Length: 483
Image (cartoon, helix red, strand yellow):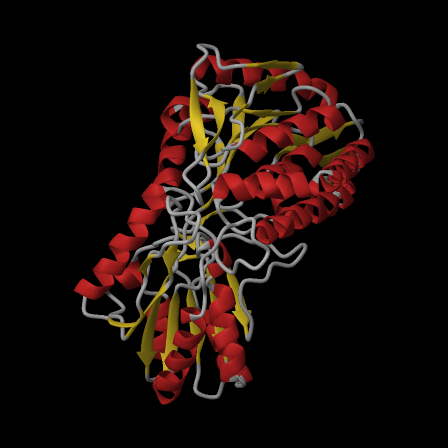
């Protein structure tokens, strides 16, 4: 057994435990081994961290935009220098494969540099007015903003999610998932070295004890949340009760991928498998967990999907050959098994039998085989509810209009995809599907500068683009009468 590390809390320039000295344990999902203790923060710790961020804000916001950009580029360099350490920390804390987290770190640094390059775009406008008046607008930071992040991309969502608020002139306090706090604490350490104390702070712990006090804090006027729909609803309610705050949410998805009869079926199978994000056990809001297949190619495509998915073998995250890691915790492990049982109870055809799997040397790990169900009723729980795990629901359809109706027939609207050689059908689908991101003959890819965000219950606001920076500023109009 490796040594259990006691992680400190960083409050401004100080490293310390929680105010009352309480901690909670972090475990490796692949082994069940306790790997660390983490401060269990409550309202007093939130107060101290927000106070440090408030103090740092004056210094940070007074930097010119190019100075802030230079600091963000230096932060990206510092992360690159410790990339392998960060990836390994996330792998043991989250359970997904090591190479997946190496990709996360690369994505983080390019997005930091992308946002640094937009520093001079945080600008207002000069507006036409009377001859003796000047009318113009400004974009100014909120001050201290909160970022609440999930467990599936621990470091990336903490560091990348701080880029837009930081370049806009805000300081940031992050509340990571209690299931994966370690790399966010490491990010705070790196940020303090590069950006100075208090510019990035972290409060670790549970939603009711740390997250809600952070959202409700009177000095936090802007909140960015990534997580489940119920979590987003709690954040919105807390922010409303504490005063009118600007809240954006990137929430869940039950994303459709449509395959028409004229599609390149080999490419479509690749898109289905890639879109499900099996590498990290489909623990992704963007997973294309509903596959809608034209009746004419339904049998052929389902057989090909089943063959590919059945070949996936869960394994230890540190093994370079691992195709699929462990689920993050026992709650997720039990949830996935519950939905596999629901699929069977609802009468769907089980093409690939999912369920628990033993991995040699990791008998206490949360490993499952992925499941594929065919002929799923579009109104069933398997087709309607986000599982956040490797359970794929396949549904046949007759016409494109029926596929669009099924695609739109859920509460979510995050992503959608279609495989077809028919340009008209592709554009009709892109126009009519209710989703924030649409792929044609592709799945899951994100592009620098392309806004990412959901419709309906999938969220509020846009990320990964200039819209995200603007959302971390407040508009001010100034009218000058110089007659």
